[in-house]
Image 1 (cartoon, rainbow, N blue to C red):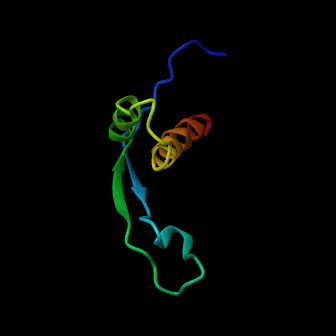
Image 2 (cartoon, rainbow, N blue to C red):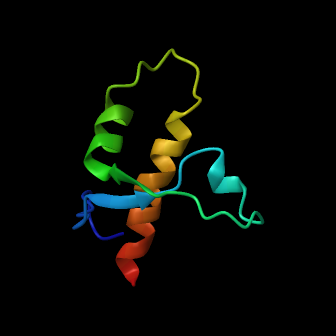
Length: 72
């Protein structure tokens, strides 16, 4: 709606590694890691189209989350 380009102003973000991200009911707090939107985007762009789509969805989710936060 606003053109062909989306500008994301952030790069680094906190991430909870798998499988700890889905163990929210446990009393132990997971250690956060640092991710990079630029790195995730580069990984998505270098993906071989014929390969099976697996972990690429996690990379895409990181990028989509950042785009979703632009409106805040």
